[in-house]
Image (cartoon, rainbow, N blue to C red; front, side, top):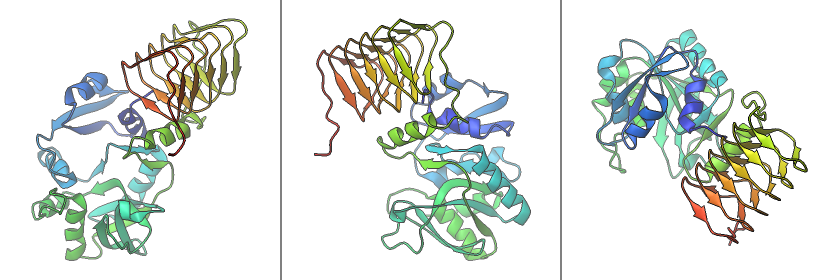
Length: 319
């Protein structure tokens, strides 16, 4: 929906005044995009030089943390309601660790939690035989005790130091130390490429999150049909004969048409060119990509700087 996943995360943390971002791969690109401040929030970047797992990632900030802190995975789509709910429950119960939990259809793909009232009895990472359908949502509030537990963690079968193993150490010390609270609000784990399409559809369809409008500098030529909620960025030109079904997001300085059909839940980045008689359906097309005339793109994610020749057809049915 026109923003990096991390930007949606930072907006969900808008009530904080300081955020530490653990970076590694593509760290320069992340820092260049966000800078040292995001909407009044101070940003600090700490490099995890080796990607040795989630517990290792948390451990690299130990010297910067003085008291309780919120920690979360960077590949989630969440709402501020969910974060605030977890913080309130943590303050009310004051355990050593609080976990946000979500009911899932396939718990074997997540860290699975066994809960007794609000107390976490056990947590197991990606079990073959899950004890419940409550998954670890990847959002925590920890006290500094987590750092001592991380020091005792051994490498998992995935050759990583897992934060769930550190939490399990706290549980084994005292069953009252770790609490779990069911999520209230938007939550989605974006672990696979096609999850981006689901996230994009959710965001574009949420009028509270998306302010879809046509920028005053955009040019929409006569005989263009715009149906539903559509956002058109500055400097974008939509040529005659184009039909757009919302919700749909079009970035800055794009050229669309003539005679195109953009279907619902499509998001285009900046400087995207969609040629004559092209149909785009439920797809994300990133910045500076060209889709030549008489092409069809459906249920697809197209990266930056791609160039599709005329007449390209992308299959979108299950084989």
